[in-house]
Length: 284
Image 1 (cartoon, rainbow, N blue to C red):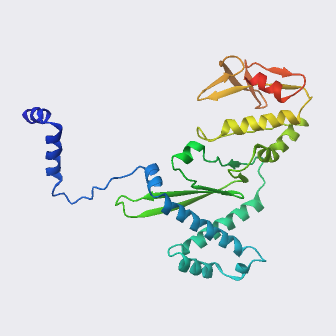
Image 2 (tube, helix red, strand yellow; image 1 turned 180 degrees about the vertical axis):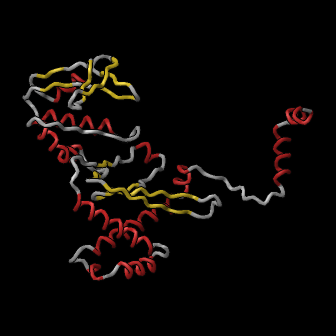
């Protein structure tokens, strides 16, 4: 207890001096450990170079599959050696990318699901660009590649992990709402003839779900202009369901004998003639 009382009575400068003395003989590298976001900004030139190198290698690998490309006559092993001479350490990336692309091609041939999964990349916002953020996600064709650059604990080495994810289609950051609607329009045609269609937007906060959904709804109603439609608008949050057309009144999801789900107690609003303006009026 005497030691604690003595420590509390020391000034801040005295406590710092004592701490420095305790660490004086320590053989531990005390470099500052940056957060992931801070290290991205600090080492952005090196990380951007690594991203550019990866994109170059990916394009070279794509050339192996193009019959009219001069690279088509090369083997994966030979291209790996060439890339390694160009950028030491990147040789193994060639076989990794080639194997992934081959797996994607095989999955496409076997594809026969009743649903499809798309991904839409959100562009960097103005305030993110002003803060020095840079793009670390590549979106092309049916794949998304997340480039994760990390500074190791010694503070001396940067590493880059490229995680690739495959979808039925991927929209780049420059894609418009019209581009998106071209892909989901078949759902509208299916519903028009009496079948069920579902469009589900999923993602973390701030990724653009509301923007994408509202853009799609506007175009759906525009396609159905003049036709009578009925609207139910509800939210599932946790274990509860809220009616957004009735001041968030709690409603319940129930399944009938045919396993068809109904929203019991939800308000249903009808539009005799579907128009974008009428839809916005109901939703607001």
